[in-house]
Length: 499
Ligand SMILES: NC(=O)C1=CN([C@@H]2O[C@H](COP(=O)(O)OP(=O)(O)OC[C@H]3O[C@@H](n4cnc5c(N)ncnc54)[C@H](O)[C@@H]3O)[C@@H](O)[C@H]2O)[C@H](O)CC1
Ligand SMILES: [K+]
Image 1 (cartoon, protein in one colour):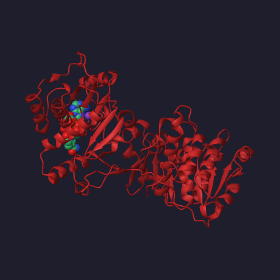
Image 2 (cartoon, helix red, strand yellow):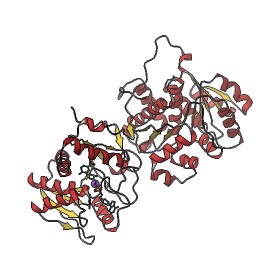
Image 3 (cartoon, protein in one colour):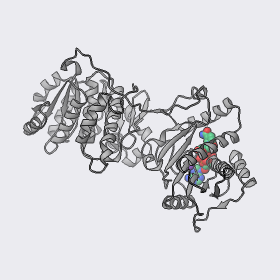
Image 4 (tube, protein in one colour):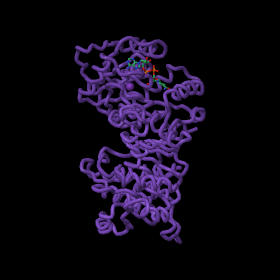
């Protein structure tokens, strides 16, 4: 019985409450004892990250997250640390109240938070204000405290969840703690891996509190973190026809580069043949700079049709534009009913003329494109990225990649994966076109849409992290092509399984 929660499993708050109850039953212990285990895990984390710290300040909220804070105070005091304890106000009943009594019975002093006062002297702040119970933006007093802790310049350890971050959605309805380290209890929380979480969580640690594996068998995780995976080995006997033929359709005037990047990433991800259907004027430039691409000028459905014939997978949208030329190619390509990756203007045209897909299809919207596809605002998408990606997948009957910090991948039957890689250096032109080519190449090599989306998003983000080792600012899409090829062949970071 290893009693280590699977780090890839991510749960909703509702599921965490079920796990909490099942854990207490399985362990045969009280809520208070489980809370002591959380406090002890927090003290271990604190001492591991800040072994020199002697004077800490713990900030306790009204619920059980606050309870964890009070018991951490008890254990830290017993371990010889000097503990300042600030409470937002009163403490709700049950375990949290008992924890407060335990603190007051021992070391004792509770300083009620006063927004006019300065924070107590300390070398480190511990955030025990709100955990999975956050249900609205922190109110005035709490918001002031969070801001002061963030502005203190001192290290911050968050218990379970950085307060103010919604552990179901990854959104911050108001102010939120910016933690250096977050020690989370019992099981992974999906909202700590996407959206705003990237700026709030810091280093994330999961403490299982000794909850037996059997407990996790009762609850199917809502989502999973992607696993690092290499592409399946190639048959020695293979020829280029065995690895599919990707047709990139796009590159209207001024946007040839998008089609080029999608074409080249499809080659680097292992497609056997890659053709690019684009404006005739772009032919020379694309051929000269990447001779492996078979570039054809197309001026409409007639000249596109024979290319569609020969292709096994379509990558539709990079630099396509929404003018008559792009729209005509878009309609013709969709009617070809071939396995498809739809991105950029291909998605904006779909938002104007919605349809469901009956053939293998992957949509790769960024939050803006997702908003257009669902007819809501980008802010509404980011308010609950999990709900948005599931609705997109259901409504268009396709596998959907919702890009951004912690990209999400959903399929129509509700499966959902979260990408743990990627960095803000990837917020630059052409990165999306690379992903389009990669996913198309994986479809062309025989992956299902779910497999191609997961493997592709993982490879793309891991290549981005490798390329960003020389710094995030100024990272170019084409900087990812070399690490992409290495990762695709199981070099640095390869191994594991997906799909
Ligand atoms: N998951 C587990 O198995 C364990 C969790 N523990 C800790 O308990 C918290 C969850 O505790 P809970 O009492 O349910 O809620 P919170 O402490 O997160 O929230 C507090 C309380 O505050 C109210 N509230 C919510 N948002 C706001 C707001 N913006 N402004 C004011 N008040 C707010 C709300 O009513 C809540 O009741 C979990 O995170 C762990 O830290 C156990 O210690 C170990 C087992
Ligand atoms: K917290």
